[in-house]
Length: 278
Ligand SMILES: Nc1ncnc2c1ncn2[C@@H]1O[C@H](COP(=O)(O)OP(=O)(O)OP(=O)(O)O)[C@@H](O)[C@H]1O
Ligand SMILES: [Mg+2]
Image (cartoon, rainbow, N blue to C red):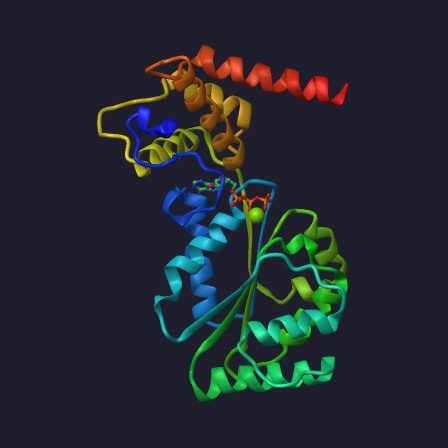
């Protein structure tokens, strides 16, 4: 029997994987999703979503993929880890991702094939090609230049390739150095951590999504406040702390996580970090 069934849950509520089923729609996440979808549908070209570590970028990217592509006129492609040794490797990867076959022996071959593919898709088939790049902070200046070149493919009305970059804040400095790159972004968004109220809503939402019966509570209000104070609303931190709290409840046969339990966990974590650093 898994630990969560002991608590009356059907699923693991605080897994750290970016599962869209556990995606809590904070106003910031909803705004990002809606505006992204609009930018994509209007074929505006480039969108950039920045956020600090663990704010929910990958979860947002997966939710976008899970929700929008019901539409046959949108072809989504995702690059989860944009680390490539050369421009050729990057372009070759994109070509295959777009479903381009045949021999591609040079960067020029790849560029021509991609341009042809994008025209074919966009103009002949009326489909929009969307390239989502996660972990965008790993994009080198050269790769950003390559993307800029791909974003140049356009008709009189629209861009042929829609690029959505999700990245940690460190990408910003690189983007600023490439001035004409950021100028092209039709949609720029900063994903902030959650407020205290949203933190409480996220915890509640994930417990319900995991099957917690109505009326049953696992965290006291004070416990949730302690979670917010410690995590400052960063979803990954919230998820990790809640998971530890549930584990402790099961081990100690407790029906509710209260403030003392959460504070104990926070202190244990602080001690661990202190000892590990010392
Ligand atoms: N809106 C949300 N609703 C519910 N859980 C979320 C939400 N956003 C993030 N999380 C949770 O927080 C954790 C981290 O999210 P995610 O991996 O998407 O962050 P990230 O910004 O991509 O992090 P990194 O900068 O390390 O790539 C995951 O466990 C995810 O389930
Ligand atoms: Mg991520």
